[in-house]
Image 1 (cartoon, rainbow, N blue to C red):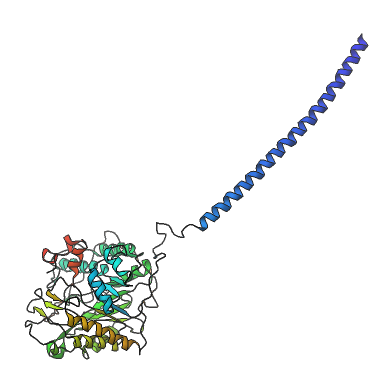
Image 2: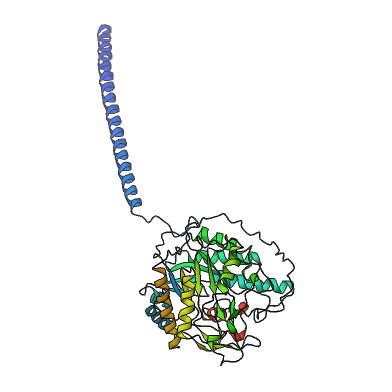
Length: 455
């Protein structure tokens, strides 16, 4: 029995060994199957990841290249039509006037407000007419700044700043300009900015240090859109003029990409004064204006000249001692336009289709002689441009320059003003208050009640 038991035990031991070997083989097979399943899962995961990656790349390829949040200060994906010699008109604010002006050859609307959006009523009118815009919000803000500056210094500006101290500090001015530029950077109809207009003769050059900062912001936020500075000497009866070099003291090459001369006849007390008493050729005035600008660094080969003829007339009750602006004849308006273009102007912009400071206003919209003068003036300029090299409207060297941010809370320091000249110059903000009123812009702080309606 003992032997049998021993045999049995040896047999059991032998069977256990076989079972162990079988179990080992089965375990190895299970391990191989597990590893195979894991490897397959990894392969499928890798394939799925690769497929998702490809789909993601394809999807991104079809996404827009910009987001709704601007990533830089530059204008993005805005296609603006090319601009040749500019032919424009100030304060064209209605569909009727825009359509009529386009028929006469006008292609650019100069407004004293922020630009009309392409979706606005006027914007929708301008698009099929292939018209564009120059806006003047930088000037509106600069005007308010000058009123604040004069109030701070205890000075007055006759026939201006009826609203008193606007509280428009330099910091607020620059912030307002920056906000306007950001708002306009996608406006495909916009081709430039009007940044300087009438200025008190008693405060010459006060804007010369500010205009470069405005221009730098414009170049940075809306590259390629020039900043235009306007200067306005007047023609006097008897063939003279009231030229004063201080009128041009605000000019600076870094602040003014283009120069505009708006030259009108001086207001007279007698509406019967014949317009022939004024020298519409400006043969004596233009050389003096050019010399004053060159003395301050103007290079007409790089900075386009825009001529602004007088295409309006009416009562000027806001000007002390001179109450009427006479209407130039068709021939005189044609002559003034031709003189500008023969003297190098690469743009002609007629003032104006509206003006809140003038009663019994006559414009190209309702005076046939003025309208004919606009048409013939445009034709005369086109003849002049066909035989001369016209300076491009967009200056070739607009370079975005860094602009230091205004210091919050910094106080404005105003130098003492020079005494006012004994003989002033009649200047006024063209249609500014009425245009602002029409667009519900800052009327409470900018204009008094008399300027809230078209007089």
